[in-house]
Image (cartoon, rainbow, N blue to C red; front, side, top):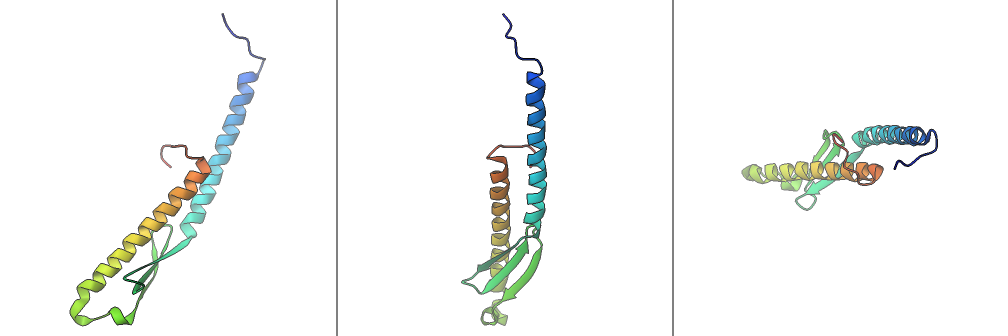
Length: 112
């Protein structure tokens, strides 16, 4: 036994679904552009090293407290800078995932 649906029922719902998908895609593109321009600042070593990074993972600012610069301990400075960069990357990625997840309501969309 076949169920009869009103004429045009499936087509109307498909059109609405396609419009909604297109709107989500446009919102995601706009949010991605916004995230790429957003700057995130993090510190390491109790504030001795500060990194500012854009959403594109481009470092735009590096600030090192002069108290931490000791010629005989360059290795510590290198470790602090690496830690700050890694933390900035983590913060940028986490913010992007949270913002995009809010747009898709938790849907796992391949390629996004």
